[in-house]
Image 1: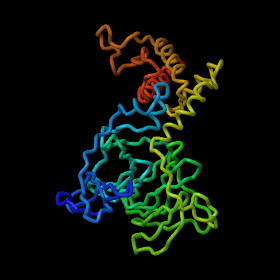
Image 2: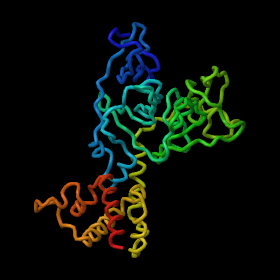
Image 3: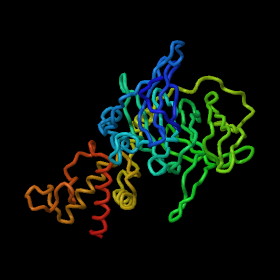
Image 4: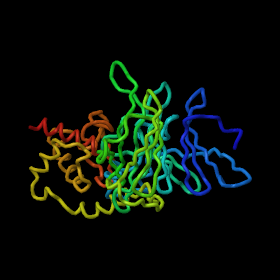
Length: 368
């Protein structure tokens, strides 16, 4: 143990190998914590020591490492960025953690003033140290919560999915009330999308609860036990199975060691095929109708160059200057309309594509 580490409760710990565990966060009786500690040589008979880790902050430049330039927009949609101005998770307790490949995923928890979180962070291996990465994921994230359980299930060959179950949060708008959840959600490791689990088989799953355990047993099932439902402690146990046939024998092999960035690699491989397909080939009217009403998430990577050609033509029709504020009259500039005319579609960020799409849709209305 270490005298320099603050005592705490409701921290989370995961084992990353046979001799090392990682701990994050907790509450020390005075405030919430956001520190990371590792316990190395945990199996040593002579004792082990907690070490405080200096974790590098998240950085937008991570895309240069994760994505090919031609797939940059899709990578920003599915990849990991420091968003909302934060480069590390807020201090919290009651969060859930799980080992995913060589990295650690952290979800939810409760922070200052009792506020619950619904964000997902990755504590990523970075050489001999660690780096924070905030995951930007598709689908509807689970409601903000703390005291939930987290595990990993293999729902399809070679793809590991993160599962969370239960927890406690708040509901209501004017009058907040404490709510114990009975739901379960899985993070599709292939498509980076949150989906709610639809239970089948006997019963409809455990009732509302928090602070239960969710223990991985082999690749395809987790054991959910106990918890607290707001009134009393629970003593029931449930299997959460990837295969609904509960009569199948256990698969006692260890959980798959899948990189947390495998979903990026899978997406990159698929993009090599889909980028060559243009469903709007020869039908400009259909393409304009599509982009006039779509969101940026609906724009395929291969359609960005065509979108930007439409953008240049539409903004020119409105009589906007060719370049942003080149003449110093303040008519366009960095935040003015038409500012993306000379951008290279292959290097545009998702936010820029979204802003250009919004301008283009406005131009369609003005030109109608």
